[in-house]
Image (cartoon, rainbow, N blue to C red; front, side, top):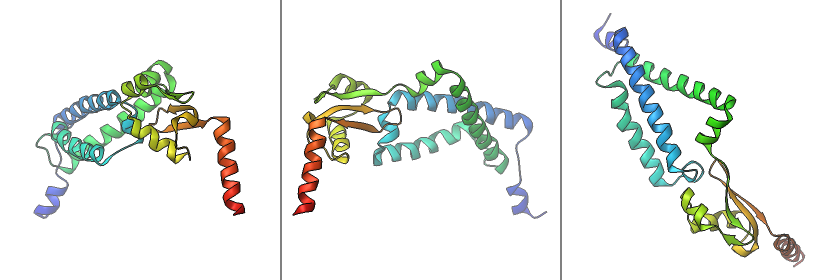
Length: 179
């Protein structure tokens, strides 16, 4: 077998694989807990800084998982461990409501009766500008026109307008179509 082909299919021994699996397990748990602590905003409203963080984070933990092992087998062991952990974790959360609630959280009210709930926004890491952007996406320009806005568990913001602002918006669009 040629040298390059041998280096592609080189693999760690069973102890090396078990060490990679154990390290990958610890890194996975650390990252899941860390990302959960960052809050829901990180999931649904990713910025360029969040993308850079994810890329750098992936590079930083790669060495912690596989160490100096650059073999295909080591990479597959780490990748398979991550896939199986994620699948298992999802199944356990699907069956365990308490764990699911702890890891995913609950929706959080950020606007109620036209008023920002700054304590909830601060706890979730959401700024007024992000709430206003979500309102504009729903065709609303003023907080006062919102009955409720909810930061969902996936990081998106759902908006329920006041009945009066819905009527105003409908009349506004009707007037635009007639002109």
